[in-house]
Length: 603
Image (cartoon, rainbow, N blue to C red; front, side, top):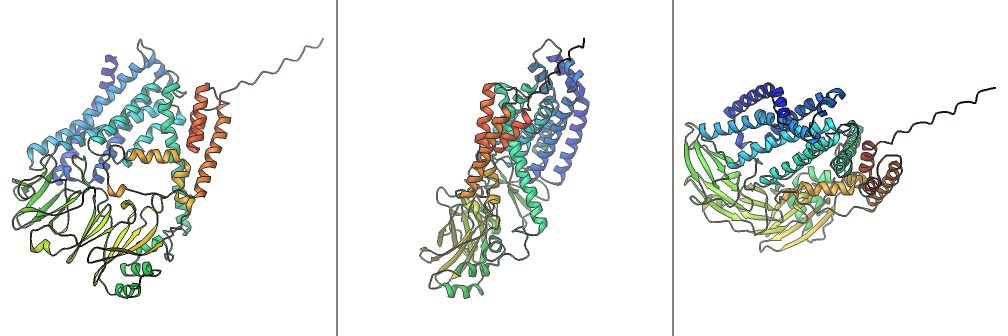
């Protein structure tokens, strides 16, 4: 086993060293022009995609060379168990990825820590491990794709498609990557057998059947996207019309603030509604949205946005350190460390803050302010326990703060006049889950405010409703709901719920797995309405049809009784994706036509 590992390692060693050298040069160049530790998540996603592609190509090339019949028989014709031969090959590939991916990342991190004043936390070492883990997952997906039957080769690749959709972060993300790698490793070793044309049987068959059904569901969803592209090309798509229909979600999303308030008040029974409609045309209306759908959390691997701000007068850059819980400052002219900046001196921040307007530092449930004159961080306001920040808007003398449960209104003048915490003027609860919020429009009245909530963000996907609701809040904080109107999306229930009726089990399971090892975030909070009757009928008919066709298909296969029952149950419960996976994974058994009887010889 060790000889196979050494031989395979030496086979690709020179290519791995060349890749590592080029990788290191690119990373060092990027560190010269930017701080790689403070990049937004989109940059890390792009780098992770390159690592996944690198591992995938290595796995495809390595196992592709052995998959030829003669090479495969020669490889397995050894006095070793098949899984041990496979483990030796995979061990060599992983060692090559350590050289090509992990070592350049660690060398770059060490250079930034030792040779620059930039902040490097322990979480950034976790980021290096995550990048390497994604490369290993790409490698295992490539090897598994080459070893499973050709018609099921897409199944291992589905993990690469679903990983970017996961909400996990920090150590939870590392645990998720470890779990995915373990699944792909088990699948690869199960497929490491003499007969490459047959799928793994027994309990090992689940390792291939489950991702295969998810891949079929994704293929159906992509077909729906293709239908939508054709819909857009025809010019009749609800979001592609020249003029938004009255009472539509598109009209509400694109309307000017004054017009939106007028639309919402049209059917209001409040006595002041005519006056409010006239006032909307001349008022300065403040609009804000879900500006912070994802809050920073301790020890997360990436950054929603760079966690730093500059003091231009003193030419100092302050960068937040998760390890210290404070900002670390260094000069932009001499690159020398200036010191640390905590709350009211050297206290740790209660949560990692995002830089905002007017020196505000917006945490998960608190807002602080950096006073440039005194070089101190002052606490300004905090949310009630259990609420999470979702957006902040500063407009003149007004400050609006949006949490996942309510809108808070403040007088912003104390931000520049004193150092005392702000006092809440009004609080208006959200009419729906924060993840469905598109915009909030606030108009100041003589004795309070008129607030409009437009809830349309997830109306097209079935994860939220589509409506506009208005509330009046007086100076004493009393809230009165004055109007509500339903907004049409123009999609129709079958299009809106297409991901659900294609397979309710797959859709709900993937939705639950997205939140695995993930903290609560306001942009991911939904309150989906129940599916309409037409959608329930569509899902039920597809599952019944899949059960019928699956039952007919398994009779023509060579599967055992237990496997047949399992596939029939899957077709009935999961629906069309399970039927498609069955059709591709288990073809009908071959039959030999009986030879015709020889004609009797003539006397």
